[in-house]
Image (cartoon, rainbow, N blue to C red; front, side, top):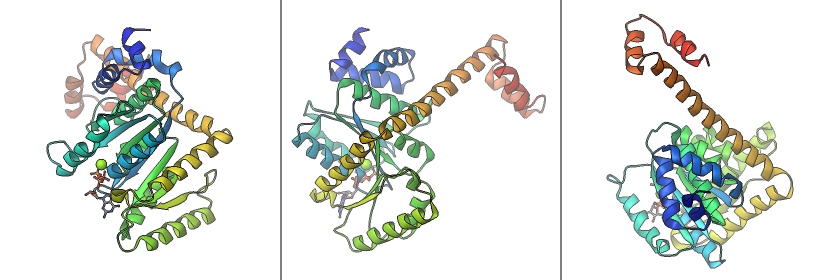
Length: 315
Ligand SMILES: Nc1nc2c(ncn2[C@@H]2O[C@H](COP(=O)(O)OP(=O)(O)OP(=O)(O)O)[C@@H](O)[C@H]2O)c(=O)[nH]1
Ligand SMILES: [Mg+2]
């Protein structure tokens, strides 16, 4: 193994941070390192925390970290920032709050900006989660805003995905129905200090019952709904107990392997997509065709995207 991967496996924080930077920048060394690390992964419990902006995900993650640390478990946190660090005051607030844990060697926290990159955000997040896994972190918490497809993809990496909702949603329930429901393993009704928390629990429950009646939840475990007040740390122990119960039920059968296989399939497709794109671009370049020139020719109707792609994809 290379020095870098040796250090990652030994739990070296700086080596892990360096590798994550290489991953985010899409550097070829990252892939070589990940290849070496692969046999050392598959041990961490991966938990996805998703939900609308401002639902209290970071606050919950912060409390979950404290809860896990009190149990003596080591934790890695990946936070996918929805906004640039230059715009959001709340984000800065999050960072400051998380600093408490930053001094704890049992916790590793990293945030990502959501920016478009070749290979995609979900791939980079997945790879970084693997780094935390290889480092020996017992639990990896991944925070994403449940809005775009990319963010939903990130949830597929987790063993357990928690969807955080807040009281008084109405429309939000519709949004949940639209995309996130299929990835939810359990719901956290956060900000339960606000009016309407019980109503939200009831709404969620009837939605789940409806799904059950329609058979759209086939193969799923029973989805728990946990009320919490993250800002006061209330319900956090219960939430973790529900997350762990879900994980343990996966471990009992072959659910864990099925999840891992689902995840591996996703990763494989992503890697393949990237590889094939590289091969195609290289082939075009060898033939002296630049992407921009081709685009111009397509725009001028001298050729069409299908013919160019056919040509490039011929291995
Ligand atoms: N009343 C109340 N406020 C809360 C609770 N949990 C979090 N908050 C507040 O809600 C605001 C947003 O919390 P965050 O944890 O930053 O939410 P987030 O979901 O991580 O937000 P983004 O990352 O921006 O999507 C903060 O001002 C928190 O203090 C809660 O249980 N009750
Ligand atoms: Mg947040």
